[in-house]
Image (cartoon, rainbow, N blue to C red; front, top):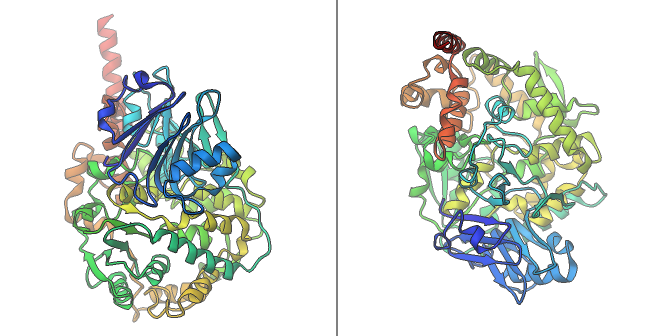
Length: 577
């Protein structure tokens, strides 16, 4: 990776058992922690920073903003922590990991931002606690790694590994809103729902303006990943120095035409990347950012990043989740046999069924996957039990089922590789993780976290922001949009709304990806493209760091070949005897 954090709870000699200090731009050695950072933008305002005081050490990796005029966020955090303790972490803003060592007799820990937008992986298997931002690097320190069956099954059926698991039993993730110490993992309480009454529209508008102003300090030539939807357009409406915008899609696609109109409205250049094999190709540069726990499919832009001529990149990822209630359970009405959401909240939702839909679980595809491979679990029962356990684990942070649904969705957001890949290549702003906006999410009752609230706030910032509406949402009302979409699909003389993303099956067939990516697994070629890509991701991630990558092949064999292999082994054993 271009940017990396790696550390140990130990001294420099322990650190150099695993890595050379020459691999990093800076190495900090504290009384308890030694950590290295590789980041060519280290010290840039709003970005990674280090500080070594008289006794303490602090490193911040990623995007960071602090109160006042302090230019070094790491110095501010170390001094504030020594004065105020954990309260200092409440004030640190951005998308980051923190490594802090306050000196002999003090605290030493690694902490996530409140929503774990930056992953930290760790293991104790080498006899010392090793941690870092690249799963493969940490996994290489494990002498005899074993595959985590449940984690792999979750990934294959849901596209995301839930909770703190990884594909390897000895390798773990730091949980949502937590810190890693030499001997424990401690939950923090920065992400706990606390609904209250206030003017949600005015507050959201004000906080969006301040959040974007904070992020305006990021330097250089600036770009934005632009869709024709709601979320990304708020960025160029407030940041007037964005030079160029980028969209993945065919030039004649409705999504691209809409994005181009937005680029013209806000005086930006625009490039549309024609979907080709790069869109789906799960090469090493893409798979490593999936970390073996999430789909690389979400890194839509990966194959085109070399053609993006900017230093800083903005995006609207998770605005729908934090501001528009993506994971909320909403009431539906029957329209000609189709359940259409009304926009109102369901009073007594089934959390498991809601999350299955939100994660995009496909029961038929999962059954077909199970039938064509040697996975040994009933998929419907397995995924329901896994999601139920994960939902229960998040409930202490929420006061209602609706907020617990949001918390569970945020803690297991499948699309995070999108941001991980971007921030490895560019200085990358993550608007939705602004501390003030996270607090808005936590304090706003779920019935007001809606698209209507978000659009009203956006219009208060920019009255002209909906001059060009998203092509599949011609109305302000969700119900009207859903009804028109349904009618267009059913009426013989009307054309359906185009999906915003390229068709995966078409691209899979056009570029012969069955043969090129899964030539040795012909029995899975009839699976949906998304499930085949998960197989490629998992295999690719494992193979890039260890011979453990050869082991899941037995799980991927067809049931018939697995039985034949087992019979051959039994026969050989009998012969030897």
